[in-house]
Amino acid sequence: MTRPASAAIAVYDTTLRDGAQREGLSLSLEDKLRIAHCLDRLGVKFIEGGWPGANPKDVQFFWELQQRPLQQAEVVAFCSTRRPGQIAGEDELLKALLAAGTTWVTIFGKSWDLHVVEGLKTSLDENLVMISDSIAYLRTCDRRVIYDAEHWFDGYLANPDYALQTLAAAIEAGAEWIVLCDTNGGCLPHQISEIVAAVLDRFPSLAPDQTGPQLGIHTHNDSETAVANAIAAVQAGARMVHGTINGYGERCGNANLCSVIPNLQLKL
Image 1 (cartoon, rainbow, N blue to C red):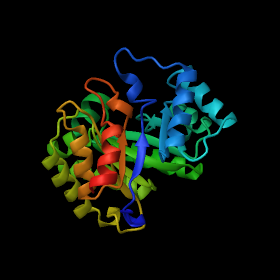
Image 2 (cartoon, rainbow, N blue to C red):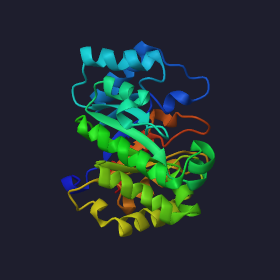
Image 3 (cartoon, rainbow, N blue to C red):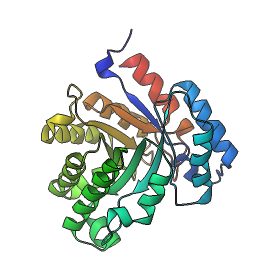
Image 4 (cartoon, rainbow, N blue to C red):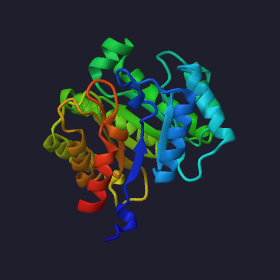
C-alpha cells in the first residue's frame, strides 16, 4: 500500500552525531563519510553530519562532502543557538555552522525554564530572543532551519506556557521544522501522544495537512520506549522522525531507525 504524499514521514538520521556519543564508539573521518554515503543510498532524507566548530573532524567531514556530495540526502550541520549576550552574526559557533556550507542546519535551544536559569544563567526572556535571533540570522544567510527543542517534554511538564513560548519564537523566526526532543528519554507513549496533541492544538499551522512548518520527534531510550514514542508521535501528527542506526547513542541510546522505519512503512 502506498502512503499518500501528504502523510510522508521525513527520516532524519543522527548516527554521525548523537549516535557517535555512544560509549566506546569512535568514528574516524573515513567511517563517517562511508556511513553518510551508505545512508544516502538507503534513501534517508536528512543526515546530520556533526557539530562544525566542536572538533576538527566534523569541520573536515563537511568539507569532504562538498568535494564528494551525496546523491539524494540533505546533509545537515548541527549547532546551538547563540550564547547569552552575543549578537548572532558575531557568535563563533554560528559562524562555524555557516562555514560548513550546508543548505539545511539544525540548531537546538532550551525549552526547560530550569535549564535557562541554572544552565545558561540568563533570563527566560533572553532565551526566547536567543532562539529567535539565531534562526532569523540563519534565514538571512539563506539557510533552511530545523529547530530542536531540547528537553522539550520535561520543559512542558514543568512550565507548559514557557515551553510553548519557545516554540512560538522558533516558528515566528522562520524554522521549517519544529522537533520536540525527549532528551532524557523519560516519557512514555501516552505522554508523547498527549503532549504532541497539545502542541498541535496550540499551533494549528504545524498540522500535517498544513503547508507551513511541520512537527518532528526526537526520542531517547532510557525508558526502553524510544521506538514506541517515535511511532506515537507520528500517530499524533509528527512528520519527521529522528533516530540512529541500531539505536546507537549516549546512555541508553536513541530511537532505532532500523525498527522505526519498517513499523512506519508496513503498519501505519
